[in-house]
Length: 61
Length: 445
Image 1: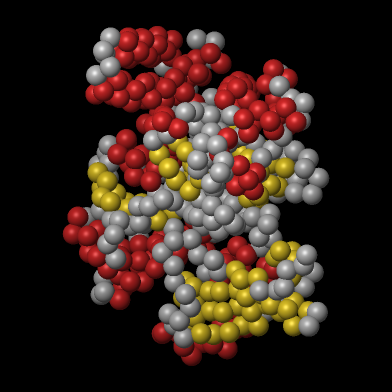
Image 2: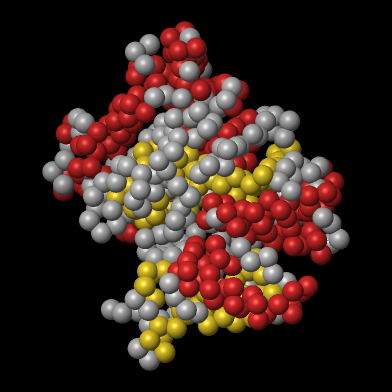
């Protein structure tokens, strides 16, 4: 089943999401709404990693 | 089974050997995290002479000390670090966004800390369950539970939202008002304890409503009690509501580790997010094949604030030898939770599981949904009384029901009972977890 999906491409996009959310926090200047919303995005990025990226390693993708 | 049946087809169809690899990797990660960030876990592992790097193979997992609820209680509360969580906590207090606590059924409640990411993890785990049970964005789900400090159906609420369902919080309404609101809004699904699902149907009928025809509930997810996996109780719920009933299991400390899919063939263990081990109750030996019941030991892989690693839950479970027709590779448990190791008690020298009594009572259509088992001691001899209620239209059937009960209880539990018939609706009703087994024998010290 997993072979039907482009797990490698998804993993790369997920990595980019993390990079962007962390970069956003880095330039937020401490604006609370930016920091907290970025944190929430990162929590969801972690769910994507758990669901896809972590399996990619096992599947050799 | 088409791919539209899975919340995550990548993990839910991962071959078992790949799942084992994933579990080992995740186990190593969570042990390392806990060792590095929690004084409690660091000390626990140091005392056992264990360092995270010692876990190299799947078998090494069993070298890691187990923990249990009493150990958490010991490190939590007033006067301890990181109030109220204690030094089991792995993150700074300011990162904790959610507090819940256990119900305290077996003693002092355990305080559970979660970060927002942990909370998302719990929600994610519940999404697997609801999606497998057929919940979709077109569902309007009703939550007839008191939103409070217990974990109960919180994750059901958040998972429903995440799936795109419309979620109606039926929090402070009374039962009648909840039923009317479900009817008014044509809710299609709900989540509750088995006791409350049956109780609501009873109340609806008293209001002159017939749930299968007057309400639109077609899916019910039950949790908190074993009834969802007891065939007779499930049948009562499904008949009462004209709906499919699915079991779901979890706890405050662990999260939502198991659920039934639409096949209703037993509880799937979410082996991508949790590690479930089964141990022989007496020897502690690992049971990795079907055919033998044992005690569950569970690890939650990615809950970071207050990790749950090799938690000795004391629930009794057994692997199912059959794969599920749904195509998921997550293993099935045979018949759900079979009881708790510390609930299985000896009465008259015989091991008794309260769920066996429920199976018998709920299979007799003349009886109401409620019952109570009381064990006392008369002199040196155990005495066991089963209190039941006849439904109003079967009041004349007492003798025949008594006879069936006596026979079936003897067959299923190997015990004789005093059977008491009580007036309909006189036994205690509960909206939450019911305690229908009362052991009133003097405790031995």
